[in-house]
Image 1: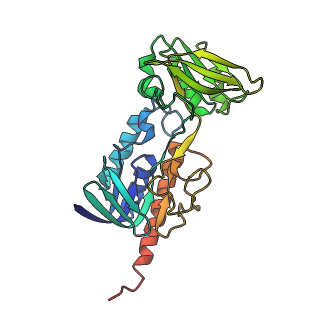
Image 2: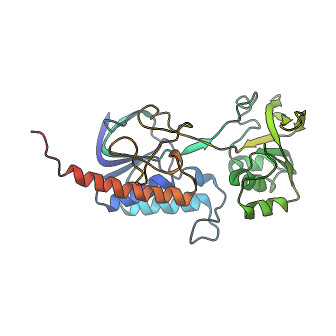
Image 3: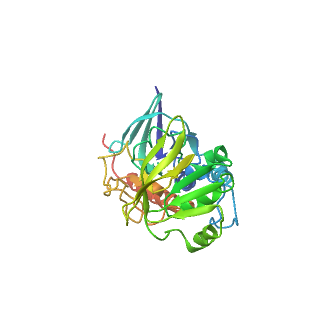
Length: 312
């Protein structure tokens, strides 16, 4: 097994992790980013972003490619596609299938993933009509009917994206008004291929080889009916990728890691950034900002270690 030692190891190569890598390396500390996937994180799947400063619109993959190139400029060591089996935050050790990483500080940037509806048929039809990425799978639904579940920015924006392919897109929301930004709502209401199903939840996803219907329930009237669809895209929120850390540090009721304003967790020398932490806003720009803050304070922490007398 290959063994590595770094001042800072960053777990996750999305916008938060890459930003942390840039700032840590600029602080003249040895820095590595370890990810179970390729770098770029969720934004790599976004068709375009229009709220990242300096770009009127930019492809998600293109933006993350720029982040990665910037990290390369500062010689951040990158370890993508790592099968991580164990993370010991107290001892700051990461074990993968073929390597061991030891660090003095760890920055957790593992992000979050879409929440599941938790209804019958959802798990069974993943890849056969149930999808959590409209950009990835939208083209498969050309001239078909699909549903999106949710009412926030992600749900509404992905629903509008799907109208490029589908003949009809239902947006199912448990309330009678959207939570998305007003400008996003205005565009959605003008889209003739988008139909809103208010005050409604999904009870079951039905099909044979492929999805053919969703059982829906009106939360006000209690009426249950079937909606004929070929695909369904849940966008009801996020759940943090914390399986490797559960029980090792303070988390909130939903599992997100609790930090202070410097991104420090309840463990000395361990920081959390981006979507994995408790935060009021989950955007590329806030993830990048989190990474910068965490790295700066990780470097400051490393400087204090130099002042501690070493045991002989």
